Amino acid sequence: MKIDKGSPIEYDKGGLYKRLEKLNNIFPIKYNTGVDFGAGKGAYSLSLSDKIKSLIAFDVNKENLTEIRNHPRGNNIKLVITSGSTTCFKDNSFESLFAIEVLEHLEDMDAGIREIKRILTRKGTAYITVPNKYFPLETHHVYLFNRMVDGRFIPFLSMFDFIHNKIGSARRFSIKSLSSYFEKEGFVLLGYDYLMPPFDNFKSGRVIIKPITEILEKSFLKFLSSNLVAVFRKV
Image 1 (cartoon, rainbow, N blue to C red):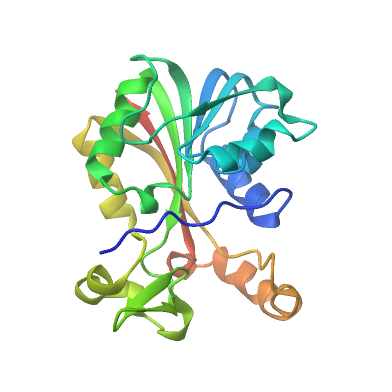
Image 2: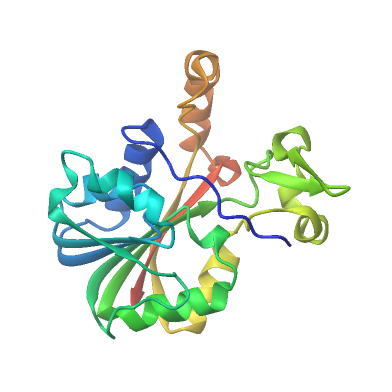
């Protein structure tokens, strides 16, 4: 699989608040220290800074962090340029960590989870959101015959590991596969949930499709949602 870096979420999007609400419902977000792991433009960091006294946002892309540095509410967030696989932080630096739509873009997933373990304190909490394997539409582009193609045009692709691993550009997870990475490093699962898309950039979708997906999100079919939301604790 050719892993791409992906595009960070913009400020004040519905998906931003919905993900944080889901995570907070699983385990309340209230800490002295925290890190936004792969913060992008810092859209999540701004909301998290209201709940975490000392928050660091890091990203490997300097241009991404420039946007939050210039944001009126970005002054109380410390910004660091570093890689998610080998960060510059000391061991046991943070009580909480947020990797929101990030793990699917790591080149080395195992190295990333080891790094999360290293920089979290004992009993530190990792808040994670990732694409759900069982969502019928691939939310990232794919490489078909060496050409970039919108994955939404190939329904059910993400459910088939053999094909997706060949042409996908980002990982997707089931709760079983996501948990296996963390449990291997000594984490325990505190809880998980699913999230349907908020249709931030699709007006007709918000009007017509969203009411239906919100019903599905609360039903036994929620495992077909677009995103998986989970919280792990370092033992």
